[in-house]
Image (cartoon, rainbow, N blue to C red; front, side, top):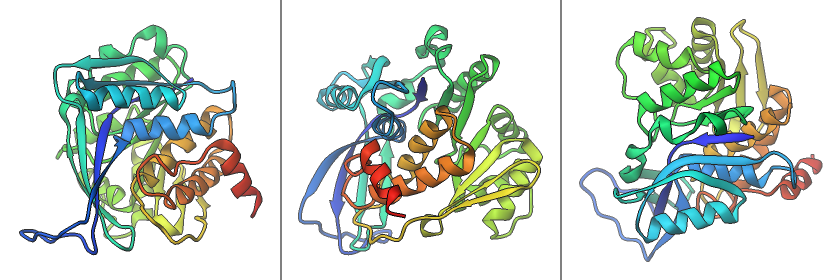
Length: 311
């Protein structure tokens, strides 16, 4: 089983000619609502590429007792995600406010809401014991993420941690504590450089050097996603693996990173070696950019395999 411990949001999306600068107002013709939250996105991505009757996906999270929350629960269930570990709280369901420009780039503000009520205890030991891979992000309380990761490591579960957004810790010792319970760290270029800056390594603007220093100093395999350049995995001994990205004309890049993480988790849980799991994840992330909304374009397994077969 793959378990996702993380955030659940409703995304409110406005398409604009260009993203507003500070203090500026821009107009959009309409706003649309989509299911989102990094945790929920990754759960849907993992579930959609699972084999029929194969690798199950469960989500531990929190939503509000409101229409958005109930809709989010139904959406996860409709995508084949087990929701028994999702708690309904009195806090409002998390919301993300997203603007997408005409090139497909986005700017996002997240109101955390119920996501900050998620606790490590919401994921029972009995459910955790069924997992082969645990996936974490940074849109829920850091202390509870850390506790769940430590419990998973003790239970022999592989911990895949997407440090997005980079946790608000300013000390090397605090960051080291997080990295010490991580088997696979997934970050983008900017996040890799931010983490290297916190731990005091002088990577400059070289994200691959930053990834090498993180992996070498703290032990996880560090996977750095680099958009159109694909993704790079760096192991603690310095070995690097590169997976290419398929060329596309993006409609909306929202959720591409979450698609990558969810499909990567599926590949690792199914026993693929890291390079092959990354290739599938890169292809799925590219496909996800062809449709508006974080989850709408996430491919199902047959779509991904057809795309991969085209070479």
